Length: 357
Ligand SMILES: [Zn+2]
Image (cartoon, rainbow, N blue to C red):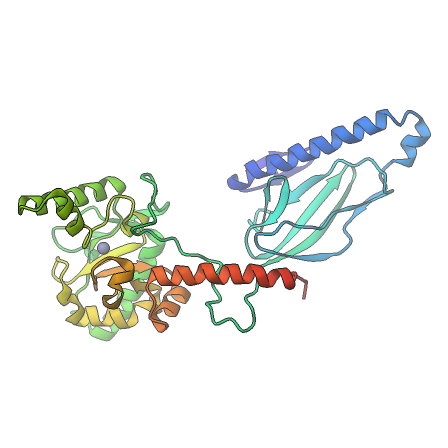
């Protein structure tokens, strides 16, 4: 998107950055107003010449900042008391953003930040990096990518959904199941895993999808149906709800709403026997290599509060999945570790400021 920010300057920024850039524009206008005011108090033509801007520069060509921190660097105007009205130019790469009138590093990467006042401009290269973990840390290095989680205490909004949902082609779906949707990014990785599984187990291997993305409304239906079934068996509504929660989630608390979760089967049902099938065994041992986790492991029922589901896989990315697999952690435990690591990195970064290498 193009936004006009002064007479001859345009910058291209992402839609998300627009709102934040408006902050900057406002700040720039305020600076201009302040300068104008002080000028009108300056009175004489000599004073005007004295204050005429001759150059703008940055003290360094390159500067470093930690992701999440505000950039400290300021342009230097010559003469010092020159009238300036700065217009900042942020590249379209998402590395820097504007929060509360400050330029903040949003993502890691290298970018160029520009500033203009009148006929003068300057640029600085900004290197944004993630806060380092203490050197003796045994925590996962990817602590900063805290994974989204939905469970008994993390509820998704009723309108939450992946923004890249796609309909799963029928040949990947179990018989009698239609109109299943999934995140396209997740499906791409699923196909890679399927290829690897077929290469090892042979062409007659059998794994089909029976559930993937579920809307809040669909989850409401499933939960209500489960409760109704138990009540039809003579349970009280409290008992029925408790029983339903062992195998299903209340609306907003199911990971299926995220679009990155898939239930697989080789006979169109969910069955604990799946763990003993060649496909189920392969999945348990190899899914992590393709970024998937068995979300509700047998030995973590007390943590996940969901019964073991050998058929329910969630995409988290290869690095996270491998860490969880190798350290025998379920997602709840891993997210806690990530939070701990982030707090540790904050402390460490205070003593070790970001520098350009
Ligand atoms: Zn599931």
